[in-house]
Amino acid sequence: MKITEIVLPSVGEPESLEVRLRERPQPGPGQALVRVEASGVSFAEQQMRRGKYYDMPAFPFVPGYDLVGVVEELGAPVGGGKPGPVVGQRVAALTKTGGWADYVLLDAADLVPVPDGVDAAEAETLVTNGATAWRMLFRTARVRAGDTVVVHGANGGVGSVLVQLARARGVRVIGTASARNQEAVAALGALPVDYRDDVPARVRELAPQGVAAVFDHVGGKGIHDSWRMLARGGTLVSYGSASTRDESGNGTLTVLRLVARLALWNVLPNGRSAYFFNLWAGKARNPQKYRADLAEDLTEVFGLLRDGTIQARIDSVYPLRRAAAAMRHAESGTVVGKVVLSPSADDDSR
Image (tube, rainbow, N blue to C red):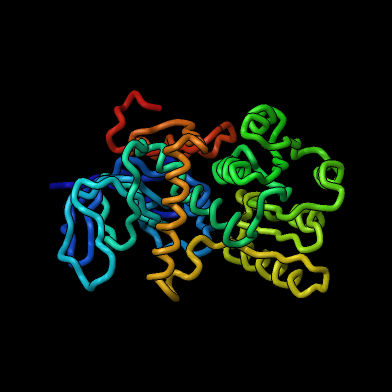
């Protein structure tokens, strides 16, 4: 039996993506074959096609940072520990690459159960975005009820989840976005600020003593403004460099310069702290703890989705074979929510 996968052969435009067929793999010991129901189109893939993602694999490879699917086959169990997934169970996984396929072979230990009653595409919007938002809020910045925070790009994939999770915990949120997205940001429960205005001045009006945390995916020169918004004891969490997406040059160097700047700020005697958030930090050093923490965090996020506390925001669903069109749309600047790829979507899907 053949499987379908989308291959990024080299640096190029979205239209350079290739649809390829290969033999369906068989799970070995400790592995699971997952039939993919949904995979996302994220900023990571946009950087990868430009050759700028800071730890991307060598070309050619199959993109796909995360997925939701159903366990189709299991290899022989290995070791002890907690029971793993079962055939027929809906699961989620962070993959970094490989998710743009209709079947994916994964380590069974990396799979996180998706609760009954949660739609696959809706769950997919919260795998990377939900895990990132939850960890930055509650593991890195450790925000608490009554705090005020700034979320840049509050209408974006991670930003909108940050706002919802923070509001659910009683945190006041100031959210930056474009003028056309101010109403949507307000509907999420944040105080909207146009990112083209004097954001630091507006934040000072809303929080004269500064804010407890700033979540910044933009990077670039604006990172200095984010640092200055903090109150004493506040935390800056940087998790990207979207402002440099279309700039030429080495993406790794861009990230390293950003990390170096944050590290320098951390040694200043002003009571504030700065971090570069990496969703994969700790996995190589202690994979068992990493998996346990990820399962705990995603279980919390999926539970909030199931009970209606937070909402999944799906911009559009494209068939897997139309990955090029999906990526082109994801980069259009018009997206509200997550662009999702689905192997089962028909060709009339958008």
